[in-house]
Image (cartoon, rainbow, N blue to C red; front, side, top):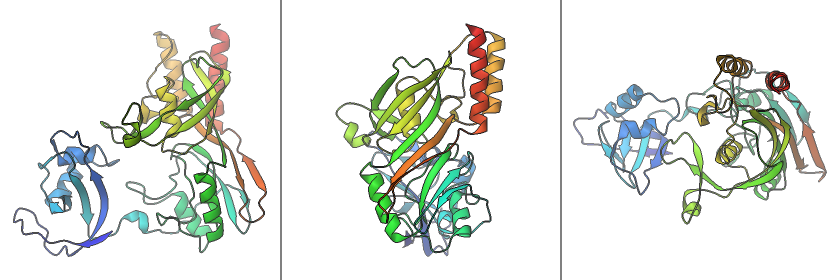
Length: 350
């Protein structure tokens, strides 16, 4: 969003900032207790440091209710906090980059890509290059834009999740695929290694998912009367594939596609993803207190330095032929090596 702002506040240097672009916008919750705006923004902007936020405030780039504020301003309930700069957000400055892609399937309508762990799907704060979008705009011309202005994207997976995505090559494909995701007719199956011995062989997790009220970089499940207000409905079906003592390998099928859905739902039932740093899975959550066991788990973390989640199966109806297509991606080497370690450990622990 581009706006024109003026200020008469002599304590904030905003001279010359006639044309500003909105980079971030947050509305404080109804229960927000007074909190310094620099701390408020640190809880919400990934990879932001307090020094950077304080400098932005000093430069007149931090606004509350359309008025520039200093970093010691106390955010209150229902305040609207925005961060404005003279340049547009980097995520809209798409630079083609020659990055190799693992293309599983391609025709004149769609591309199916096997994304490696560590690759961000689209540019955003702290990740302005090296993304899947940077690679796509290099390899393919005239990809249609979705409602967020991102070429070809109809869905996404997290940076440290590996696996399959479908990309639209035409406006027709974009519309058709988006409707399939909206109406939940696509097939999406993930494999996940989780902490603990999952009690049931199969089950369904239902719970509204929304932004965590205290840690805004996480999502959480909301229950009760205000669940509809704070979160969106989410459904995950799971089935145990392999029991390995202190960890369990499960298959998860998504009925909905909320941000971090599998990570949040599995933690909700007490089984955080193995080595999921954001949700606490990089701590030793189950097992013994022996130093030898601790060393074993740390070696597993080194083999698999990310959350143990892989988008293995993707199915959808082809936009023009109407044929249902299903693709499968083999479990990547880092997860396989970690599984082999746990298989060996559980065999000898019996």
